[in-house]
Image (cartoon, rainbow, N blue to C red):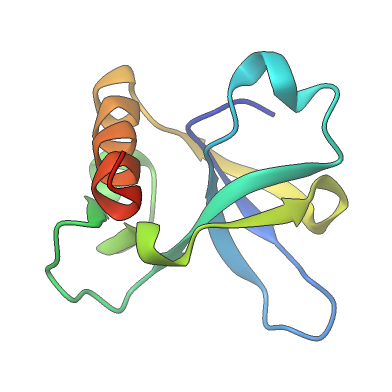
Length: 102
């Protein structure tokens, strides 16, 4: 697992969905829960979304939604879907800053 990877998540009691890992790489090995942002096909066109799609290794147009970031146990992440480019990871960082005001 690495920051900027999109994983298929299967949380108990919820529908499975893709999420993008936001936790820094050095912490992933020692953390039980990772900070993730959901990936959704519901596009609102707001600054706290990062558009994603085929060029990112996903089957359809979608967004990572940073208003819904949350910690998630690593055990819920079951399969890596794709790894985002360094440029895309920088876009994720900007969206985190917009969503948190930091």
